[in-house]
Image 1: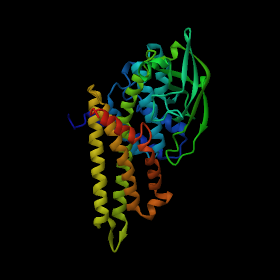
Image 2: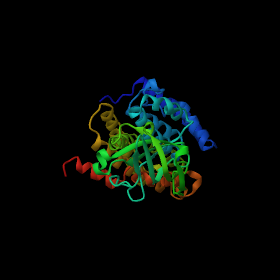
Image 3: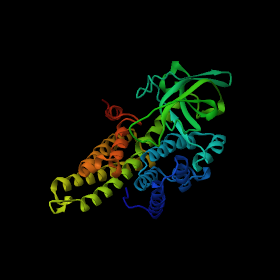
Image 4: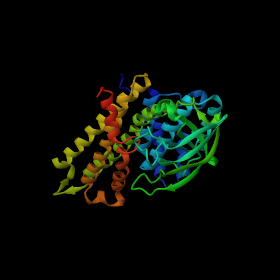
Length: 371
């Protein structure tokens, strides 16, 4: 594995980083989304014939990391990552020619925002027992059910959802994926949460929704395979937004400890502070190296079930600890809104919950060991 970035990777990183710094201005969510879509970040891994850059998972992490390093809007970064990894990439891989032609241009240029709808009130981490049903009637499907804790719910104009189509076959073979447009579903409650404000979280409701076979993504019964594949991409590449936020806050913390004085010297001269920063640097470097390695495995078509779970587990735990360390170093300044550190802490808290909790990642890891 070559750790040296290619000229193409360096250019991708630089362009997205410089562009994302503009997001720190007072812009609307829609304007920010369109601005980042214009950088091509969403299309990083999309085939060139479908309007993307045709790059891989490693470049996806590089792009997301650069975006989150340049912008302090962690909610937007997460929203764009969720849209890209769990919706756009599956449509690019499993969609028909007509589906790709119909949806990908608008998903790439920012005209459409997608939401992945798997979670239900009775089946969060337990995706094996969905209550959402799609009953086939001749060549159509009748879809009913409610999805909850759906990222991008309020802003969405398209949903990639999963429903049971054959209860006799269970999760593998009995679950199907559907592309559903905005006029075919309702947005229910939108939840107020402690962080990631610019990524809406809420309910998606299907009531007697008639879908044709053209709404089916992949084959009937192939939903579990599509979902698992999208989760491998999400669990690995979501690391990018955490790495970028950690690097941005690390830079801010180093600047702060150089300027902040106590007992006639900068507080960075005190071991209690400098050792905490050493821990933060170590955590970031280890997280980055493992995420890059997992992305390399994904790009080289290795079995990444364990690597994806380890990446998600380690990086999500790391970003929470990292932001709390930064708050402790900033002291009282870290607790007030003006310096932005308390926002970073609140944004980091959900990292061990979304895309499969830490406990689920541990289950995946040990299952790969035959335990």
